[in-house]
Image (cartoon, rainbow, N blue to C red; front, top):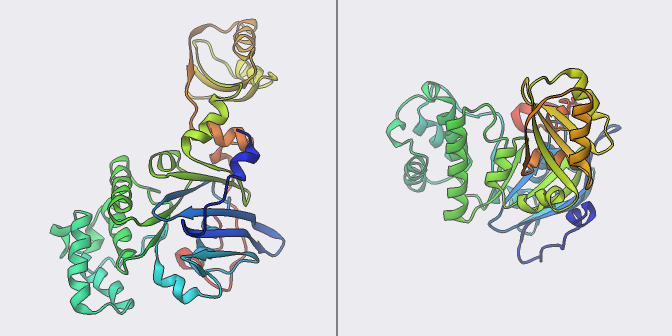
Length: 351
């Protein structure tokens, strides 16, 4: 399957679509943050926007959540235009921003009561809903504890629950596991999957973490420099490499040197070579003769190969294959502040 086929896959029918983005563009002066992107999100789908800082992921979320206006194109949620029908859109959505929005001196229950009151939820409805949501994230026994005493993982679960108070049909998660320890990351992923499975909530996840995209998302849009470069399931994206003439080789070279590594990178068949340890190198290579060419190149430089393994591609490999650089290679780029603030108090960054 070609790149073009991955990007221009059949459109979802209007009846199955919860979110529809058409030729969306966002400019900040001469800087193009979003460059004519289009995609659909099905009802009840977990959809991923995968890319590095500066790719345009959070800019997309700001527009979809009515916090920013597009320069061109359109976007609808539940059939409502995010610009013309922004009030109706806000009734349908919940937002979990990268910045945790909680008041440390208030208890868990007091925090949720405060935010629920902002939605004008009647007290007789809000009280049982808070209890139900705290139970959902297993925080019931800490409901009267100050949030400032919570671990980072507990605070992030509270951050998610806050966004569910209005019972949204669509939930936006901006880098949901950023800065969390492995155990807390697993807990957040399990909760997101449970929420989607049991409530049928449509979820958009922005992330530069491959594990989040791989484990959470039904489909993934890979976005880079404001463009959607591919959109498909994780398994289909990986077939871009495994289904063609590409191969991932992992070599153990006991006398690996910088000179040897640089020599491998100059080979025509090698698209990338990443040193993973003092003796290990991971290669993305192409061509029927790639295996033999790599082995010959190592031996010509006196390299001693102790093991070689053909491994399955990852989403990181796919991203590299499509964009020519790793996710972590892109710098965090600053853009001018907008007149309408976005997530995190209006910081002028795209992510």
